Length: 168
Image (cartoon, rainbow, N blue to C red; front, side):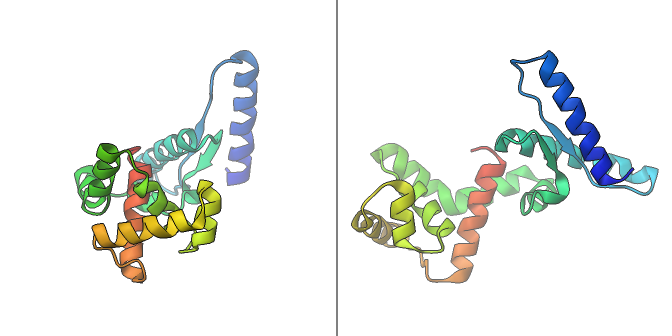
């Protein structure tokens, strides 16, 4: 079947189910197209990953092919490896935030998402830019992070993607 036809059929099915079960949240995941019977298992696993992605992102339908970097994370069979990677880059900041009731982890995340723009981070977090500047100085000094290093930023952003993927 054509992918668009499959999507439309699933969308129609969800609409029908929602009209019958008004209080239920209904999600669907679409796996990859396959050409042989041997590939069905992979497509099924990918459809489950897309289903979880849809539910986590509040989408009714998600296609595996549109999951971006999460496709790669889904393909890692060793979840302990993902957890270890996350912990290596973010756990100390998470623990510090929890103990001291601070918000350094979210500030760092916003900083990375805003490509280092203090003004955008301040706007997104409803803070004064001096507050964000102070937090970023603490983050860099306390955890010895070099946020002007592209590779370091990549590792941190990957750890945040893993955090989202594992629902930590």
